[in-house]
Length: 293
Image 1: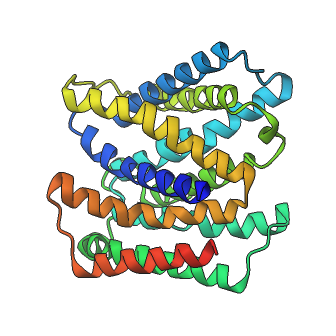
Image 2 (image 1 turned 30 degrees about the vertical axis):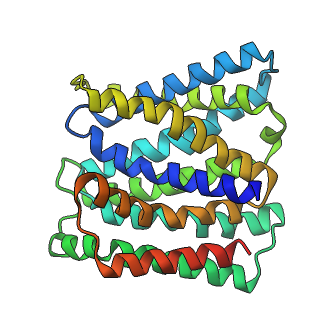
């Protein structure tokens, strides 16, 4: 029962990342926002670790935690945001993100000896199919511009390569959590890993010359949500689930993020919610239930 509740809370919170990304667009450059978000979460967990007198990672483990956080959040979100800013369809980026559970399963099975039955693989396939249905309207809208993947200064091949790098990064960052890093106190580990993510965001913000920050209730509210709910609770729940179970089963929940984001977009921004998207949500849900059974 507790595991089911944790899974439900995780996927609902994780899905709101799409909403936050849209909400902050008029007010802040993405990596500058991510720097504030990761830095705030790092300080929050550092305070919790200090108050609890938790042990901190040291030596080589410290470097591993920094790298894991850099991959799991910093590179994944930084590269993904950059690719979208260069003209890659948000729908295409979300579809690429839906490949992450499959990639995680493909690596975790031989690397950690995880077992995924035929039913589990079938569930993964259903989950991906559900995501495709949910994103179908966006993908169709982007189709007329398919020959112009990048509208920014970067060449198309680089935009595609960076978007694939983003998916590889979150996969590696997720699998890192099942190594010796799992022995660390989750509070101090989260503090260090968020510092690692913040370092990546800082480098990207400086490299891209990002400086736009228009203070507004929406921006501050989004930042608070990002610090506490996204990088704080959501990512920590993902790490907790991966540490204590199969990485493949944990990441299968991500198939539900795009469908939930579509519903949240309908409620929060008045976006269209078509029948095919509702059907996609049902298919993705069935896939996740099958993959986790």
